[in-house]
Amino acid sequence: MSKYSSKQKLGFTLIEMSVVLLIIGILAGIVLRNIGGQGMAARDQKRIADLNNIATQLVNYSSLKGQFPTAPATATNAGWDSNFVTDLNNAGFVNPLPVPPTSNTGDKYQYIPCRPTGSSIITGFVLKATLEQSKTQAGNLYKNSYSSGSVPSGRECNEGSGFGSTITCNNNNDYCYAQF
Image 1 (cartoon, rainbow, N blue to C red):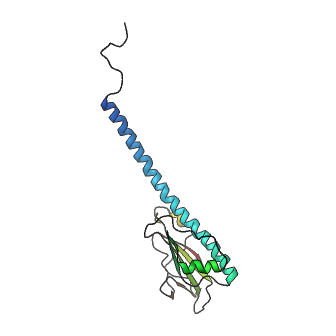
Image 2: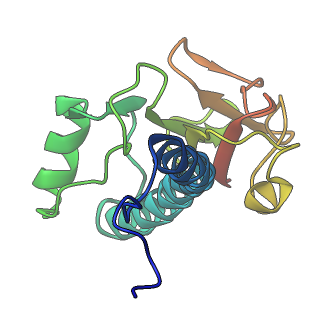
Image 3: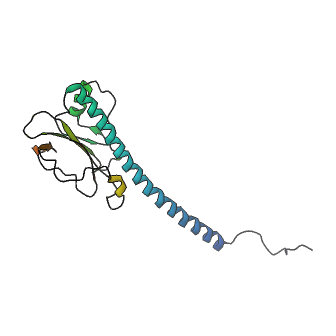
């Protein structure tokens, strides 16, 4: 005689299947939440790498032209200000400048020209991006960031409202690459 009676059915009950699906759902939620945080960190790393890339191109521009570009510029996911791109293209730069990784309205890069006080020659700059992770969440990302509300003595920068001695690089999510 068989170990199983003819009335006993093999398989899973609806309750057992529901429990298994619930456990899989919980695990998937945990994994997706962890992946989401890594995406934010990866985008922030890309922003910092982009600023370093732009800085290299600006130094090359200065070597050719004797100064950095004169007008402040902003880049969104759609690209950089056309005058800034034209300036760089006229100097022989054909590679597109990097743009922020997302199309969020706050995701932008800024180029801020700086000069010695009273001079007309642009001898420095600040590149600025807003990171998704704050200084308290990921302080190690900000270790090379210029974090001040003012420029060094004897310098002035144009953040878009004329040259002055203040600059907004001290907000919690501002990452600034400065070359004075």
